[in-house]
Image 1 (spheres, rainbow, N blue to C red):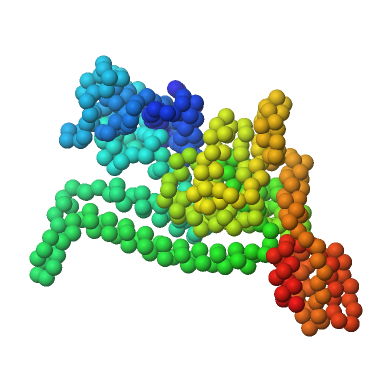
Image 2 (spheres, rainbow, N blue to C red):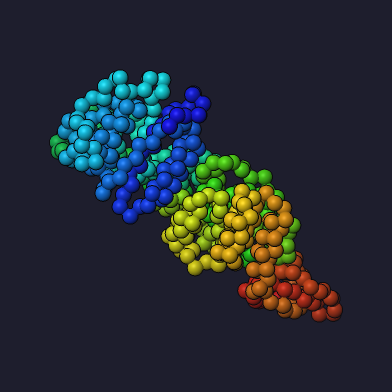
Length: 451
């Protein structure tokens, strides 16, 4: 597969194993997504090495033959080092025996790949064996996602969240360096076994994670306070697969100046803006971090506070890129992550985005398959206006009308009423200000209690 990427980019090879129960389409889609992750990371994908197996090879993920094929692309030896765990030669690669890859079979050194991306989670020993066999840097899917998150984190909260997940991933993969296996003296007079250097390093990582979590907890308390302050206002959270167009839709709905990029995980920080044109009461819209297949658990845990915006929203806008052939699988991934953060039963409006990339027959099929969804393009002002009306209708359904008399001694409540409700009529008499209002039942009850 010849590369059309700029030559100054690091060259990468994708590695994937198709396991039982995974269809050809699912396997191809997952590898294509890994390729997009590589592009986001600034790598040029030059080739792919794939294999069907009943399980990942214990030593180096793929069998000996595919390892040789991979080594030809990276300039490595193609051999798992002596002493590493190995399995019997696979029946899928019977023609290849152990040994170095002949230089004649390798591409010119300028075209060799320096990075190997594996579409699976690797054990420390598998990653180490692949590095030795290929002579290239090896990153599994989790490491690639973490690297992208680390690059795109902007706010202090996002930086802390990513660093916690990165350290948790790195801790079991710390390696003993040469000459560091002697144990440090322990106990009085240096008696006792003490700690090895690797144990010291791991303890430092654990201490650093604990320190970062304390700092993150303080930021989360402030964020929770802000959410509580705006709790009386209707809130919509935009959720969905990464690169589904959530930030574009957020920008169109709120008129905010958000970063829009054709990249995976371009947005990591939660942004809250008012729906435009503003409504009474004002409706707030929040953007959230995108989801992806095999999203590392530590990242979900670290970003749990950010995802609180989704948990506490009255309505979720589930945005789907229907121009992506794998959009149905992406919808399932989003549903799974929402369930993991206890949002499985939250009210949800399905938004089928990027309809401008479809032909009429495809659009008609989607309308028939998802009759309650909103099919739109975030680039179309008319489509966005139609979605805005659907959002307003959702909140209007639960609103009630009531009349509140605000005594003159409590006139400060009048401004609160105007902020959180729609005022239909206002009149003043000798007892105070009489307001005919429309708002959410809980808000109306709270305002009545204040007067």
